[in-house]
Amino acid sequence: MKRLPRLLLLIFLLANLNACVWLRLLELKSQLAEFDENFKTEASDHFTLRFKNPVLLSDDFVELAKLQPTRKEPTPTGSRWIQTFHKIDAHGKTQPGIDFYFTLDFNQDEQLTSWDFSRLFMAMVPAQFFEASIRSLGKGKVDESKHQFKVEEKDLARITVKPPTLEKIIADLGQPAVTTQEQGKKLLIYRFQVDSPWIDEDHQDRRITEAKLYFDPKSEELTEMGGKFIGLKISIDLLKLGEQGKHENTAAKAP
Image (cartoon, rainbow, N blue to C red; front, side):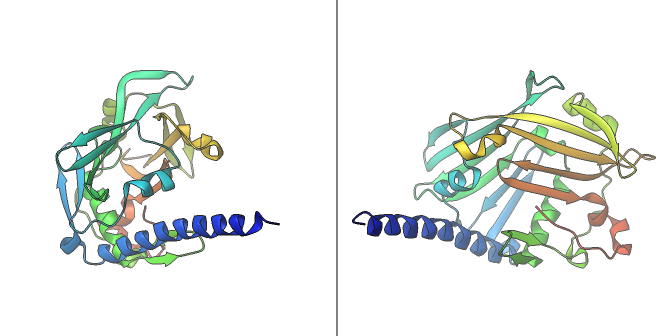
């Protein structure tokens, strides 16, 4: 009984820690509504999202991802965290040299100032579609019970560039772990092993992540990309973001 107050205090502190992370995510969502005032993007073979008014903390990354990054490096303005994903084949063996990275820069106050997505990640979803999906989040609605943003199809940005083809994806990423069909579309599944010195015991399933790429069976153009990367769920419907999406009326979920 003497320990009960301490246990209640601990539960209270943990609950408030999670609540603080969620509140910062809600603040980030509010910033997305005024995207150009709060963010800057840079796209080449990488894609970098820069935070003009940072709110997320380095501890939030660990809280949400349930792991530590591959490595941490000091920088003149703070620190850099690098999260590596190694491609694995159909037999679970790592394929050397086929990796992608998330690179996160933090300032001296441990606030996230930039998030860079490396070339091989962007091979799975063109930068124009990726940025449009992020921008659309500012118009989404928050589902607090599921901790998700949902964006209606009418609020999605429109992209006129052509999506990549199956041939281009394989040229960049090599052969997938699985090739199959689903709902009348060609489906390539790529698997990656998360390189981390520590993963929470209750989230060991995050050691392996999958990227699912759907292609039109006739044109073999990419129509949809989805995956869950260390807790970051990404689902981008390229058809809804493309010009043909103007004629559709279904709802879409952004990452």
